[in-house]
Length: 440
Image (cartoon, rainbow, N blue to C red):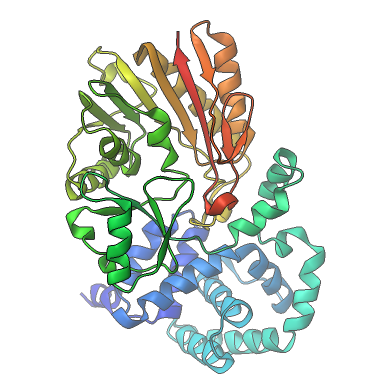
């Protein structure tokens, strides 16, 4: 009982952020780590806790470099909670407008709740030294790329190899706070009408020039502040992800497959653009993520067939009726959405790329027989690495006599041999790759 009460006891923003950061260093996603700890934070401090967690992970490679120079010796593995709190403290000192005295005193107070007498003194000494040596530290990390760009070495190398003229811009884009982009549900309203509804609610936004249904807010807000959000008039989706529905372009009477569909944003957008499809089948491997798809469909007022299934073994769930359109939103490194998910810097490793490429190739090969002759499959990833994009599509097209890459004529991104690549930050969008493959 006492242990349960301790787990439910309210905690402050710094300790909550540190606990989320620690869990990410142990392999858990930030989304999964942050939700339960935020529930223990007072409502007025949740925004601060979230900012500290995201910011600490966004700059983690640099903050770790700083701590290596401020600590006389590395902390023991069992003191990872103290280390995470130091990361959060250094982030406050170097990258926020939080007053110095508050950054130090509040973080020290959090350290004193960890049950180790020495923790508060260590945190106090390290943060005060960080403030004293701040300018020297900033000068020092300019000569070390992992600290300067706040990225792991393998990811910087991958960006440099793929985009020798753009890798620095990619890294810089990843370190920016992403815009909050909305997708207006054209089944309920128009972009112009919803834009006016935002203005009437005191929210400033601008239409995105490269996505017909997109509005970009000047400042992110809680979804509860969005007009008619609960009635399905709008969803949150980056403009890059909104290109998928336009490229797939389903026609009335088409049977459509959305493979690897969670959380369902593209599923819903397809139905908004073409409500007269014969059927839309959304398939997702993880049963827990099916709930998100169903919730989004219900809120936005759409109907689809939602199935739990493995895209690499479609015979277990496919009824044998071909699809005229298939969207394969393949699992990937997420190297194009690091600005939204800074935990990727810690969770992904270079060794993941061969495994992911093998999975992407299996998914593409397994989905192709489900496509009707004359139909089109759109292969998509939120990656900017060619190993997951062109290196998957090119050998597939070369090995099949019935697959042709249709050129994508668009004003967004840049043309590749078989598709089109958006680099992170270009036109304010996330990094995405698309290829349109037609079955002859």
